[in-house]
Length: 566
Ligand SMILES: O=C(O)c1cc(C(=O)O)c2c(n1)C(=O)C(=O)c1cc(C(=O)O)[nH]c1-2
Image (tube, rainbow, N blue to C red; front, top):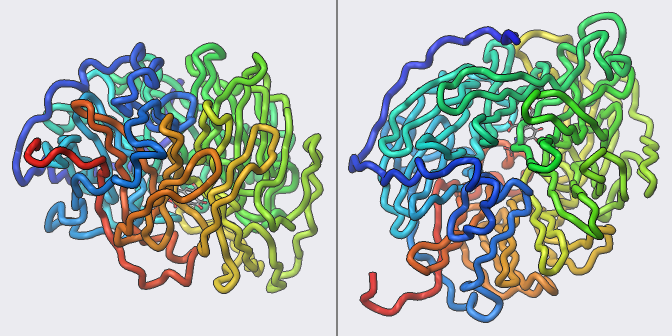
């Protein structure tokens, strides 16, 4: 299969930079598919984006638990924002989930930064900077959600739609592939996923009217294996949901900009796709617009779509479905749970995409209704130019890309909820390559917003709610210590009791949370690490937070050590 993209050309590379050059131990060489498949059993590590292929963001570590957590404090802080004169501090959110392999942490930042750190001390081992051209089209900030590690390499996508393989020991670049056309508005923000001998990526750029796709590359050589487009071309199944004439499908969006989950038994990747383009303007794309706003199951060897479930047909509200699809089993049935931007919690049979249940998980939803059997009745969207329409949830969704967690001990999902509306006023745009293709001006309800971490069982029954004044827009972590961790936009990092939502601990991190905490241990000591840094796109979404402290720090927390043992 040939690639259908234009190579945007090499960026100027600043090469490997290091204040204190130091190689990392060769732990990355020992990570292969066998260990990734069984990642949960080695909970001292965090080997892959969600901690394990199932997306649960659940760790077996329990040294930090409901009893001991009150003694937890910072063990070390890595100031990523001081990483060099080239970048300075970030004005964008620090979104990555760090990975840990046998005492070495690998983490990515904004604008092409990647670091290897000593996971016990926070000391830098190496750092890498990709020279990202300044004119890359990015809808939602110069951000990056993390790396993948396998076979001695660290894989990371770059804002200018490159996939890099770095040497896990030295940080030097091993290979560099183009995964999208920056001139058309394609970019990269997601953490790659290693499955078998492949590294799998997804493209960003839906707001610029591109056609979203996933790609698989040979992890050793970087050779391209397959591409899977998320919008069918004329004649392919699903193409009947787009206008027969014209090129609406080719500009249709559906970008899979968040890491997929994976089940070895079904051999399927579970992918969330983004909104259709243009956003807020359905007139130029009559029909359901498959596979936008969908959960799509992709055969990992062939890159072919096996089934799909669309959460918001013919979306005019910017309701991406890119967020995680959490795999869990119940009553012997293989299920998948998905909290969509549109305010509904979908549970599907992950072998065939059949809907098991759909229930609301936020208080205010009025863009339409979905009944328990999946029937969608959308509200009418105004056709006239300049006519405002107010709707709940707003375009950031009742939950953003930031991830929920599932704890198999409590059998509960923990969801970062944003309860906030917005007003869209249609402002029709003609398509122009590389220019935002976005059919409305949008104003978020700055004075009427709230949020929570809410706990749901798999039938959509709410078991508890921990309320926050502002919407919750960081990912959640849950552990066998019966804890739930999450960060607030105003900087507090909190630990809740997974059984009842009681707040047991908090720490003010000095900048807002819009990233993903994780946990690991080294030499028998458990750490909880969280990237902290407010900025970029999320500031516009929470106007009340404009001017709040930016930051680019990674903070690792632990229980106190005996004095003098470090
Ligand atoms: O359609 C797309 O390709 C695309 C990409 C991204 C991205 O890559 O960050 C975001 C969005 N859409 C988006 O709609 C959105 O709300 C959003 C928030 C964020 C973020 O990093 O907080 N990214 C993105």
